[in-house]
Image (cartoon, rainbow over all chains, first blue to last red; front, top):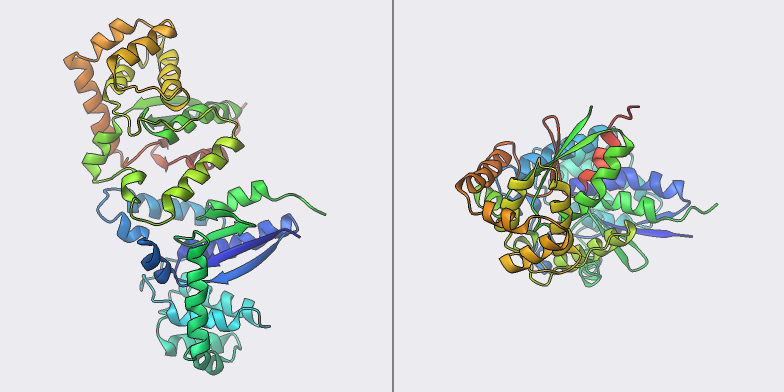
Length: 200
Length: 200
């Protein structure tokens, strides 16, 4: 089976887009997606990278265009995306939660809830009380998950995941891999769709 | 008829890609392309922008990925692209030539010759002797064109074209417009292909 690894951080709007659209593309080609949490702030520190908002802040017209192009993308794909008024969101708590939940029976529910809270419902997901309410709302064991994010095992799990991502050549999110072939950004969706082999 | 305006600078490899691929997309939808020369160095100065090579030079992995993604694109579209060893090429001379030739009977021949010299044949197209040889090779009146690039009219024509581009919101190349809707980068090819209405 063809495997697509998807490195993401909940704080990246383009990771949200890939989270929503990649499963349909994968299914069409009978491929499987493996979600790989990492801390984008950590990736930026390790690679000297910055968010587009920082990188292009002095460039006249660039961020306005990016916003417009994002709106066009959202409309074309009929997504429920809303910009988050608390951007940039500090995601270390929710990314630790992803390390804890990934591979469990409720990983999909956790991911969907957090992405929705940040990129559809404009929640401030760096506050434990907000995280707790969002997770409880979808029936997740919020107290267990929040407690887990304070354990040494989960903390070092996120650090290791982030270091591993950078060691594969990652400098930003979203990043996809098929084998050792890397694809960066939401444009990766088109490339992956072209490259995946149709298998019955 | 649907019109696509294509703002370009010969020194931009992604402008070369659009120059090669946009006509086929336009033809498929019975649309027309209008080439719009501008000086990318001037656009960068006016908008505080930089080439990706400058903007991302400190970011570990980013330029290596961009090169790899470019190679993938070139292979997918079966283009004759070669990186230019003299990059960044000073394009003021050849862009003035585009201002002079655009709208004449030999504009296509001129554009094709200059893009090919820079992005297929690795020529140093900021030297008049190289420009002369390349233009003569394809039967263009090289001396007339080089003389025209020294006239006040052509010089101010390129300045005006560059200012006009920035006043439309342009910050880089390639940039496409359909009406007032702007599309930046080689990714614009996919968007334009999606958006163009099929007309008989």
